[in-house]
Image (tube, rainbow, N blue to C red):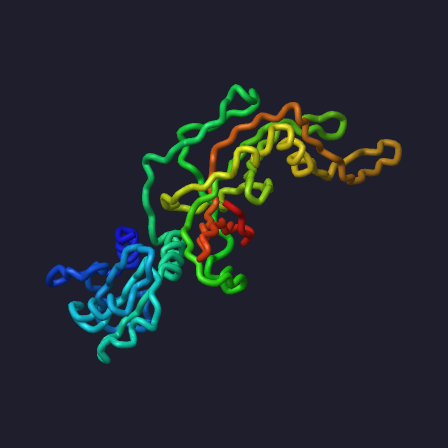
Length: 313
């Protein structure tokens, strides 16, 4: 977590200056001194000491804060805590102290939004690839050696929380594994005319939905996050995939016809229907941003960034 915080601050051009000495304050680590903080309007006018508190079962106590304040240098501080920390523990601090505290909920949202905004970019040179047994469906090929494509999120976590108040919870950004299908085949038109076509679709087992894919949907500079996979039986079989795709591939097209007897040209809508037997399938795994929500009672859910719905893990 400490490395992530440093990376986000660095991406937002926040320079952490060195501290004069190391402070042996139990539970608190000073990351450095920042001259200016974009994320804290209340403390944007002078330097601020930034502290990190590691995760633990118990919340930060009033006694811990008082011991920290005795050894802490300066009087302007930003505490990023993975432990619960309340305003009540700050009541006995010296009057000249200005302290901003972020608990695990706000800290995780800040990190998640930074990741999805592109402030935090981590290259992944050892991404685990998942391959389907090609012997199971002879019409399916899996593209190998490709880095997983990430789709842009549609909703923001903070906006969702405003409309879905669920009490105290922690959130961690993750990616949901989906399939990017590349399909080719024949369309059969009027008078049995053939036309070869190519399509790209996303199969999302979480939303149980197939939708067209376009390059403008790609989230550039995707970070390296934990991926969450749906159960194997949530993926569509080849027959079910064809059945679901057919109404999406069939279309009506304007066709000109000549009536020689009347010397009149008319324009009609004619059906072009996909020849399911001609379809060839290739896929690669792709990913969609999401958040893992962790509630006070220990329950965990996935919040999907495309439809704003939550799913059980």
